[in-house]
Length: 166
Image (cartoon, rainbow, N blue to C red):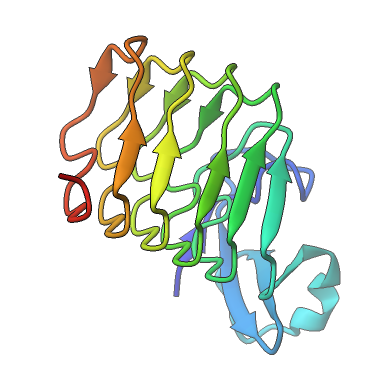
């Protein structure tokens, strides 16, 4: 069982102290507060994400684990108001192929895209100053990444196990 922080602002809460749980049933991934997986999930209809979600546009701050484990997700774009990608935000999004970041992006946090095995290229915007540890770990299809001179810090193991990079 995976325990996650809230899905950004989508569910009306952003407190780091509120942990949520995910359960995969039928065609949805359910997000709910607490740890009781035996509860009636039908009462959480506003907290479900289709398992078939393929494309998203992020227009506000992301929370840790916001979209982690959504294996159908193929494309992500960020609005200009987004300045960072939170830790483990897209962890294990195995179908993720395309990411579009604005020139307002400044930070890519720990494990942000770790284990996104379908991600083959990534353009780091010229506004980014920090790529944290393990940010792109195990992105085995990653064969191209452009890191601008604006990046002053690349954390340890940021590209660990990225066997496609040469």
